[in-house]
Image (tube, rainbow, N blue to C red; front, top):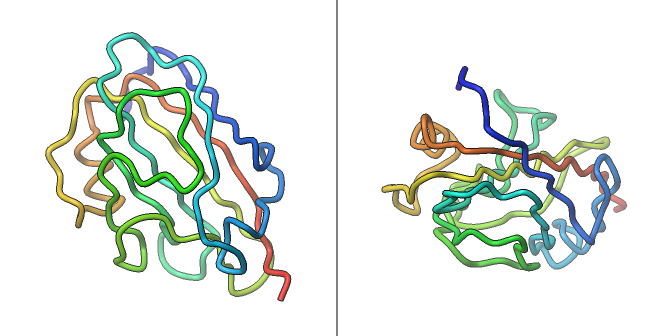
Length: 153
């Protein structure tokens, strides 16, 4: 992905600020549901959105992926507990969102959203690596929101 992006998406959430703490509701200590996300500046020609939520601080090679979703209809708002688009395989080899649950310390959770110029031909068993490969050459813009989480129990 060495080519320049046309624009940058602005990603926000009503649940937490960039580099702020993610409420436990969205974690393994709460409801384990995805937070609502808001996207500004979707470029013209956007045919679908993709989401990757990744924890690079996880104690395993490459970190841990908490959510992979793609073929989401272009929208400015991703609802809380979102189940639309194609929910794909997270790092636990389960389909859909799995909330923050760090074994120790505070981890950084990168909520990355991509605006794509196409719908992707992947199935729900695709994970982060397969999605990233399929998106090559199709990313119109992307944005990132980082949330922090530390277990309270």
